[in-house]
Length: 214
Image (tube, rainbow, N blue to C red; front, side, top):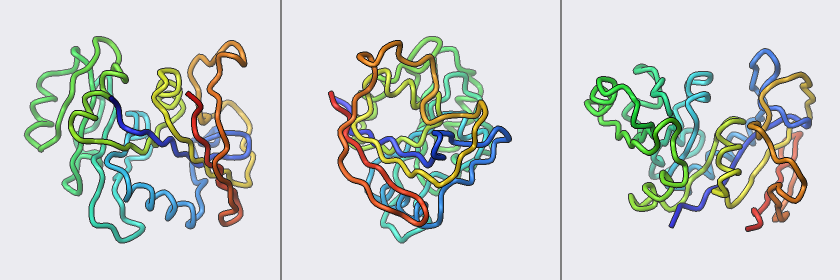
């Protein structure tokens, strides 16, 4: 068993999450509120270490009133998370998924701060195993707010159930981070197939919602 995973992203019309200079100011205020409404409904929010290092997010519900904050889950194979990262504050519970080769002293320091550290995998985090562990811990739904690398890994492993995308009326171009990076699929037959669930205008952009065909 695994949690139900919703992949959410704000991107330019050409599928970029940032400009070549790393500017990721894509969402309008209406979209930020939309995302926080989803956060308030799920049990967990998942990101990769790249997102933490670049954006230093809080990963809490603070744009709207909510009764709780979801568990924050960071996929960090090499345990590179800075000890002063905002995701380690006491606003919500945090789980860091790492590997057997992670620094034990840093793990001890994180645990002192109330952070739960899960080892699953030798070189890279075993995402399927992680999903099973999270489900056993009572996490039934996850909002995936990953970058291109984590998104690719989650899609490749068949772990995403739903897609929610805000497309801003912008074109960035260049070799910037896209919604899904990684090595990619070789053929159309191999690719992830989606079923359109809903679409609507939001601010000056548009939101597309899909179910992932299994």
